[in-house]
Length: 485
Ligand SMILES: Cc1cc2nc3c(=O)[nH]c(=O)nc-3n(C[C@H](O)[C@H](O)[C@H](O)COP(=O)(O)OP(=O)(O)OC[C@H]3O[C@@H](n4cnc5c(N)ncnc54)[C@H](O)[C@@H]3O)c2cc1C
Image (cartoon, rainbow, N blue to C red; front, side, top):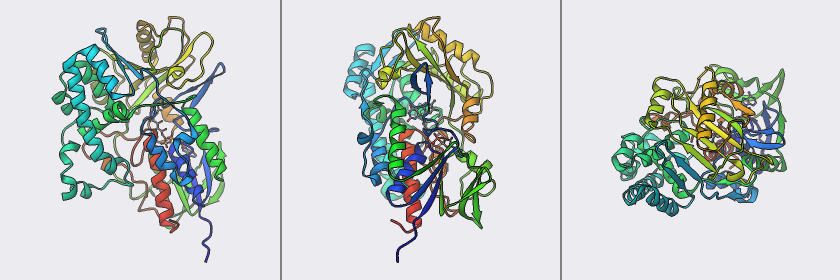
């Protein structure tokens, strides 16, 4: 007997929601996607400034194979949707003592650059560290990233114990970095990878040092035209596969019969569904969409870092796709962020030039410079001081001129308001603590049949490729539970 078509509602058109919707619709489900904002993309947003579209969220794409895995049910690869860009150099790291280190997509060229700028010994230290980080990735990625869930018992099974030393989960990123690397500039560079999921290098497990391998060996890419080109392509693919978009339509709550999800409500109207995929931040689910009802969630985990962001009209010289301006004492930044719970007094300034990183648009007299300074999640204070600090540092680096306008900014408080339940966290939950990965909400909520989570605040975590995998896992679980796979 033919089964009736599975009716799925997706809450949110961020990366996780879009990937889940594409996957489900490509396998025969009838998908309605509800997005509060008038446009799709979520944190991977964009703003139009004087005719130029500038990304306001992610600037660097890693792990393209995660998108390939998420899009496989649609018979599409990432390369079918967008052209990846290999900016050259990818990064330029700069310190107040005058050291400038260009970093490339190819690890061997980065090692040569380290030898040229920091010497033979530093090159050897980074090569050793990358070999160590590669081993952690080989053991960790199949268990923590590409698996549909993380299982503590499996990790400590006799089969897995052999790989435990390579995973290095019992000490912190900082301990492993300082143990293996003596060169102070390299230490800063490697510490910064903790912020790639909004964590503290002194608290995140050393396993997370595998992020250095992901970026420095596997590569951090641009997307021809900008990250928004990827979002547009995903929306077009979803529409082509029959997903119905309800943009500008906030979901007010999820409907249940007993514990089971039966649909949702939007501004007074109801919508029936066999299953709901929640792409909204988990904090919004528990506080608003299903208050008191989202049983099966692990205890709350610490949110990732937030940040002040701004876009300058830069008329200065920008040589790399991404520039990182370190302060004299980088570890002090983490003390400010995680212990004093305030923006750093002397922050690292990150600046991405989309015209270089993605071959994106620019104005005739200037190019956009997307700038970020980390701040604690939940930071409610003003950020005028951070904007002034960013301006001063970029001017000192010759990247902007004194009169260059700053036409767009977003504070952590504004980020939190735009993404309810997020506290302004950029990547969902942090990885601070040895068991953080095990506390992250799973993609299937066993306590609420019919409810699935696909977002940076669920497994396997934040960042574009992980959110794509989150969408994949949620779609797979939904279809498996409905007996459609
Ligand atoms: C400044 C910044 C820089 C970043 N840099 C990088 C980077 O370089 N590389 C990288 O890989 N990642 C980066 N990230 C992280 C990455 O952007 C996110 O992890 C990812 O985009 C989040 O996707 P998501 O699936 O969690 O959905 P989200 O982007 O969180 O989207 C969720 C969607 O749900 C909608 N929604 C919420 N509640 C409702 C409701 N009640 N009804 C309807 N819709 C609702 C929201 O409007 C939103 O559109 C960055 C993020 C930021 C903010």
